[in-house]
Amino acid sequence: DQQVKQNSPSLSVQEGRISILNCDYTNSMFDYFLWYKKYPAEGPTFLISISSIKDKNEDGRFTVFLNKSAKHLSLHIVPSQPGDSAVYFCAASDQGGSEKLVFGKGTKLTVNP
Amino acid sequence: DVKVTQSSRYLVKRTGEKVFLECVQDMDHENMFWYRQDPGLGLRLIYFSYDVKMKEKGDIPEGYSVSREKKERFSLILESASTNQTSMYLCASSVEGLAGALRYNEQFFGPGTRLTVL
Image 1: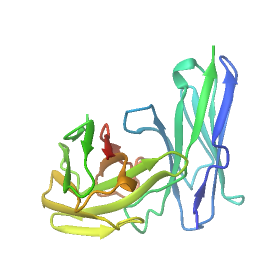
Image 2: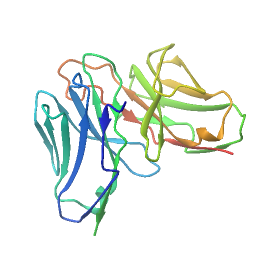
Image 3: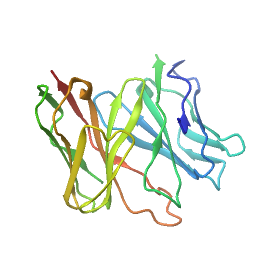
Image 4: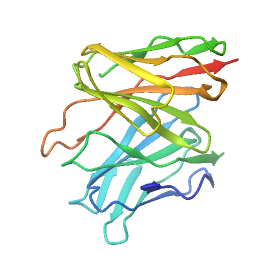
């Protein structure tokens, strides 16, 4: 039973365009969401997060949107750059519960020059 | 900066060997985690620890054990390595979450150990 789903295993975009990575969750107790970026042969690095009390959080070229009613979040990268090519993992947690994060399976983003 | 280090970047072992993967963090974090990453399966939690000598099973603990004798160190043990344990192993740590903290439950990852079992 997958509680966090990233339904697109891969995404390819042109440099300079927008990249939109999607994530759906099923557990209504989740109230904090994170995106991680992972290059090959490296550990994931934290990218951006959002609390359920917000519906948007921005950090430079990266914006995360949260739609609680739809249990959906998305990561927007504008403009996309070749260095953004990586695997992106969505993760969720229940702040009042466990220290664990529940990860999606990841989306491999390729930004073509 | 938080630093999480793992003892080896690449490791090759034979079936049946006992394998130790070591992880050390330098930020006095209470929580430590071991994951494995496989193509198409994402990050799967093997074990985690929220305090010294405390451990809890994750989603795929079979074939693994862990040890946390000191706060900064969390070891993953493969009692008898098998070929289906060939994977990328990732260690992470996190601080005990604080109410209102922006990065509640953010985990900091090490560089990973690519283990091949022949």
